[in-house]
Every structure is written in structure tokens, then in C-alpha cells.
Image (cartoon, rainbow over all chains, first blue to last red):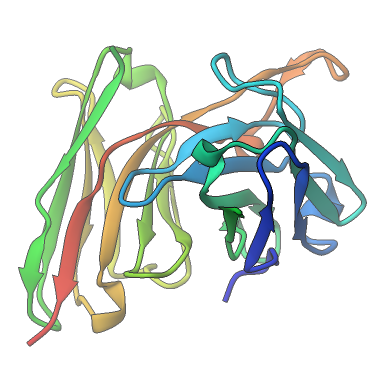
Length: 111
Length: 130
């Protein structure tokens, strides 16, 4: 059972903005550990979207942005496109578990 | 081009063993920390194990004592030796490269607990079943 909780699904029409939350606790996000975000298209390996809470690797469009506050983090996707349909995972570190932890995952559907 | 190619997956009986390999190319393998992540069918991602450039190892509680991560820098290859396999170990296993980054606020590179994955392999499937 993951210690980082995400909504199972979010959806939006093309062009709309959606946000995915990642809720942790005082032993992970709240302890100051970075949050990273990954996208997984069906049948493929995950891909890095955001590292260090807010940083986008080269090649990731600026329609995607990350934020972090307290024991939670969020990934925002603006100008939603059909190609954004995928599963999204947050990831951090947990001091109680002494290891990396992933969120439960969120499926984004473009209506 | 940076590439990670896993191999060694397959069908194994409960209690059996398997060794996964991950061949790295396109970057200086010896300088990078590496990680194994798995994904059970229809489930989310789960961190399995990691090894830093100096050979220090880390394990998830679910595999501690059963799995062993190692690396051969002369062969640019990462390994995962899996013993005493259980049905719940059935998953796609991904090899991944870890990275750090420079934090402007602190004027230093982020430590190991803040590493992220910037390159993933395509994965190899392990099925534990009788």
C-alpha cells in the first residue's frame, strides 16, 4: 500500500486544465523530500515529467507544471490534449520506510 | 543515445530464483546510481532496489533478504538476483538511471534521497507461478 495518495482518475475536455494531487505525510513530502512526476502511456515504460517539485526536463512542454506545499504536491496540465491520456505517478522518499515511494497513480482521460 | 535494456525475465515456480540483467549504453554507467522498479499487472509502480555509484545498496522491505542488486561497471551492466520468489513478485521489472540536480537555493547537489529517474528501460516480465 502506497504512502502517497493520488486520485484514481481525473478527466477534462481538450483545452481544459486538470490537476493531479499527491498527498503524503510528515515522513515524506512534509519532511521536505522532493516530489517527481512520471507519465506512463499504455504498454510503455514511465517517462519523467517533473523533477525536484517544479523542474521540467528538456522536451517536456510548459503546459505541465508541478508544485509542492506542506505534505502535498500537485501536477497541473493546461491545454489538455488527446496525447495526455495516460497514467501519472508522483514519487518521493519516505524516511520511515528508508526508501523511495510512488503514488497510487492517476489515470487522465481526455473527454 | 542513452539506452537501458533489461533481460532475464520469465516464468519461475514459487521459491525459485531468477537473475535480471540491464545493459546500459550511451552514458558513463559507472558514474550513475541505478534503480529497479517493478509494476504488477494492472497495478502501480513500486520501488524495489537501488545501488549508488560506489556500490552501496538499498532495498524495499518487501524484497529485503531475498533480492540482491549489483553492478559490473566493466560490462556496463546492472543485475538483480531474485531468490525465494513469491507469486506477489510477478511484475514487469524496469531498470532505471538515477540523477541528481543542482539546487540553487542551497548551492549544492541534491542528496540521494532526492534522486529522480531520468531514463527507464522497456522492462522485462517476471511471472511466478506453479
